[in-house]
Image (cartoon, rainbow, N blue to C red; front, side):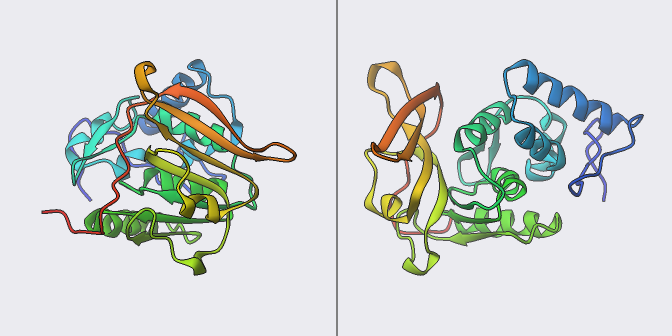
Length: 237
């Protein structure tokens, strides 16, 4: 497959492998990871997931040469692919365990879905825009990721048969805690989502089901997430 001149070599790696250390791809990847470490990302499992998921595969072709930079990238349907630092910090806040079931609201390009699949036992992602759902599922299949699936549907119209989830992440700003999300959270679970924040600006928040205290919310870093889309599922024009 041809690639854009100057774009980083694609590095779709299985867990436990790495590109040849002398290759340009390996050097670009190492610099990418070092920048994340320098910005405070310390969770080894999160860094390893970021190392083994090729962000350039999820970026629009014309932006492939920017994939290893810490910037958000536009994707179809008026959505964005968040910068890697934001993804890493959201994953650290979520604290996914190897046996976790994870619900993701908003698959987007599928990049975060793939990261979650490296961390968790099972991932179910719900994407509002059908083209994004189809494309992200295709990218997961291309990487051979079998423990994640992408469903096209409304964010809060969750089927009962999906069961309970140990971790839930919502790539949008949410008011309160909608019943569908609260009902889908397993005992001792964690939800990471966006909050409007009033004058302080939008920020990421972590809601943890804490023994003896119930749901405890902690404000994290500022974010640029958009509002949760709540209309019926639809196709992009």
